[in-house]
Image (tube, rainbow, N blue to C red; front, side, top):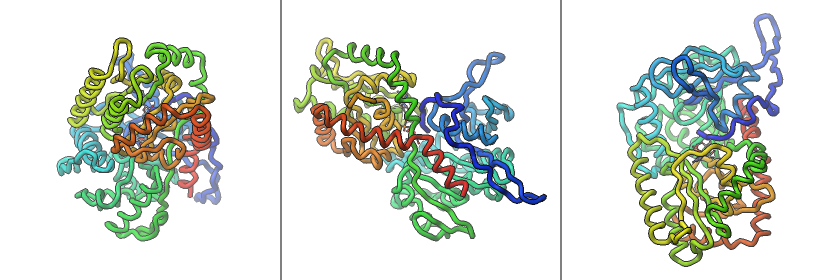
Length: 488
Ligand code: ADQ
């Protein structure tokens, strides 16, 4: 799930619901429908211990976009606290009702680490790593999903809207519908939905699809994801219909693409602040005046194509198309899912590659690759965006990829070139990036060379077009369009 600023909290950009008219026992009653959000994590996390413990908002694009609607509608947020064992009772934070879900350690292992992150995550990302099909993980996946569904059923008022997020919650829509047929239920998948050839591998494929068919609206990042879903549903369940409208057990289900975005205004404003500008010049000076900066910012995940990107940069230097005198690659990678063995192996591989490239090409005062394995503050990330001449976003597969949108949003009057993988959802919208196939190392090295040599007016022209797209379709626009569909 995305991480982005919480700056706009409290800003309910156009979300105030028109009060729908519903038929109550005493005739026609007008009332607002609450929005219940269900996500793996609550939008707050506990900091401090014992008496000093308190809740602090988590930063995230999703949190930024949804908290105003949940607050405004007097709805609630259902999610896990991030700590196994007993959960606190429902509480209110910043005018939002929080309904924590308690998960046992076994559930966290089976539901989260195993089934969500070792089965669904790799399979849905083109099986870049071999997914595990561990039958022991299914029962905790079911029981955890049931806990989220029950928690939502207990806080929802009659006729409320419920928005369920992401692959961890595959079974929640049908479970919730069985308990509360009065609710309008929407589901949004943040990651890609795979084609039938891959989805068919899942021993639980029918149950997983029937879980989603409990929703009234099923949303995906791209049209391709939506089509893949409608096709497998027609293949493996009794549902019938078209790519966008399904009929199942006497109900209509809308299937569509709702490409997620960012709080573009926040990125623009932050990028233009004095402290960001000062920090950006400091970064440029430190890597060496006159050197062009190629930047990559990712969660340290095997889907993000970090090793392919490093090898392409190595090739660029090897071919002599650029040298450490004229450019530097900065790779910032935030540690993630360190308990999964695949992630540890990948981390070692990346560190070896950085060592190899630096060992071969660096000169005194001229390091070829700066590698930061750490999460940075949001403001620091923006300073790096502001400092970078070329942004390289080359996942092997990605639902959307928010970095691809954050960079243009942070480049007012600044030019800069975006190199973007064809296999990121963002490529469907950001057509004026240099689009690349991340598995084609020669092609990627060519793209880096072309980006470094692109004339300034062309770079500014392309960046202008990317910026218009991102500013027009920001995260508020995304939430609004999903809510419109969900209201029916
Ligand atoms: P992710 O794969 O986690 O989420 P992605 O879209 O790549 O998300 O966004 C990552 C976020 O983390 C960005 O906001 C970025 O700025 C931030 N970030 C990355 N590295 C960082 C670092 N080192 N320090 C600080 N911040 C860092 C999933 C899907 C995506 C989809 C999102 C949203 O996998 O495809 O775009 O959800 O739906």
